[in-house]
Each structure stands twice: as structure tokens, then as C-alpha cells.
Length: 397
Image (tube, rainbow, N blue to C red; front, side, top):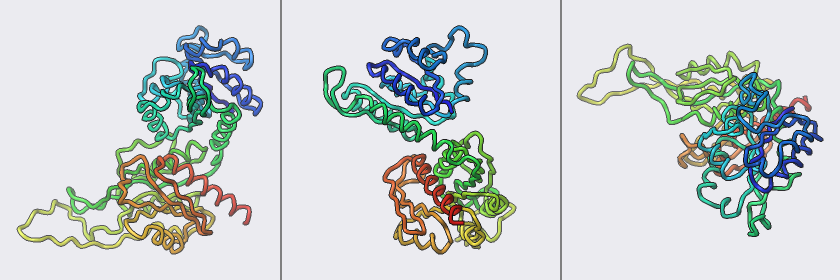
């Protein structure tokens, strides 16, 4: 298991040596990347002597240009950890500025990212820094927040680097999570379905697909083989998933049923149309002078069908409601034979947002509320619970 340890320029840079040693003791290979400012606080020689590996300090370091070095490192690591992270590097990461090896590595790696900031308390509390932190959290990055206490500048407050043992423990937790779904097949449905009325008009809904895509991305990062059945969205599917694009509810049902019996975890995050036009006109329907009646027929409830045919799968459903949220979610959980239900109140404007408040309910009465969390964070907790249910079922079986 290998990580890249990015070290940026502040007085706490020397603590990155202890972080590296703690990871090595846990059997983790560490590739150190020093920014030029960091090298003013602690020398590359120190890290090289202790890690027995070359330390990267420059984009075009002699002897490291046989391949595109930042790409080869980016593809070889299971995590990028930045300890300590200055306000400057947070700004670069947020806005995609790639002017050194570390910031370029950040843009190049598909691996999870963990950030442990350290800076003056006023800097940490500055609105620009807080906004950057929130954006990075919304991308699913992990944070080990700074601690309160006396600072190198003589001030007192939140800003000092978290304790070394806390950082090491969190890095190991994230690395373990990165392998938690290895060998597991996960099916995710996402986005809306589209029911054509004629070649011009259709019925659909406001689903953006962000929640389903977040689940697919998170499952992929944790080592799962991911199948994503997606209605039309503007989102780019995560690299590495098996994408099955569909348009209508009938197409989604067909695609899901073909895959279902091979799956271990199924997450039905798509907003599937309950009804479709009883007929689809071959030509555009002309506007008349009076009212037009559109006759609809009910689509089969895919989630209910999966519940009836469930064998070993862990089945996760979503309840998007405008009233009686928890009562409706519990009813669907039992009636459709689900293992986990994610309930959210769509009157709060969750469509298209990167954040949501959801309630996760299980059949045994477990209940978790995630308040105003990023959809990537929600996806992580959802998959934690689904995998726990799966492993529990295997032990009892």
C-alpha cells in the first residue's frame, strides 16, 4: 500500500516526519513530495534518509523524467495526504492551479485526498479559506482539522496541526476504507428517466443524478466493480465504472434486471417515472384550439420488483418526499423488502445541489441523520451501512 505525502511550507512541516514514520510502522510505503517552501523548514535529505526513497521537490527533477512523473506517481498511490496544508495549497487545490509538483499531482490522481491544515488562527477563520475548505469537502476530500492552542506566531486559537497520532490513524482509516469493497459488485441507478410523448415533448423530473454518481464514485474508490445505469444527465461518469445509459423507465428496468442477480449491493438512487404516455406519437402533436388530454399508464415499480426477487443482495432505496417523510420511508422500506432506505425531503431544494440532509433507516430500526452533508459524504455512510449489512448477512448465513 502506497501513499503520497505532500508537505507544504509552514513551521509544522517537521511533524510530517513523524507522520511518515508512523505510516511506515503500519506497513505503508510513503512517497514524500516537498514544496519549495517546505524545503525551507525541513530538508529533503531528512525525508530521504528515513524513507529510503527519493523525495520529489520539483516538476523537472534530474533523473525523474523517464516518464511523466506526476502521472506515474498519481496512478501508483492509494491516497494523497497533505500534512501540513497551508492556506496557499488549499487555494490552489480549490481553483485548479497547477504550478508545482504537488498541485499538479492533486489534479492528476484518482486516489482519495486527505488534508490536514495548519496556519494562523486568523487565516484559518478567513472567509476565503473557509470557502475553499467547504468546496474541497464537497469533492469528498477528507480533513483532519487543526487544533486549538498556542501558535508559532505567539497567538492562541485554532490553527495548529492536529496531533500526529490522530493524523496517522485517520490516514490508515481512509486507506482501509479504500479496500473495503474489493471484490464486491455494486449496481447503482442514477438520474431521471424520460418518457416520450412525441419526437419533441417528454415527461421527466428534476433529478440531476448527483447522488447516484456520488455513490458510484465512492464505491469505485473503495475497490468495488461498479455498474452505473444512468438516465440522461449532464454529469461525467467516474472513470472505471461500467456505464449503461438509458432513457426510459422500461429501459432502466431491462438493464437492471439483466445485472441484478450477479450483484452484491444495489443502490436505486434514480428518480424513475411512475407513469408513461399510453402511446408515443410518431409525429409532433399539433397544437389545437382546445384542451389536450394526455393518457398515462403506470410503469412497473422496479424497486418493488427487485425486493420480490432479492436473494443475497443488499438492496438500498430512496424516498424523496414532500410530506410525512419518515412514515413514508418506513412504509416503503418494509413493503418493498429493502435493507436500507435513504429518506430526504425534496422541498428543501436538494435537486442539483451538492449537499443534502438525509435519514438512513434499516429494517432493524437503526436510524442515522446526516445534516447538510455533501452527497459524497452521504454516499460514504450509505456504503458503510450497506457493507455492514452484507457482511452481517454472510456471517448469519
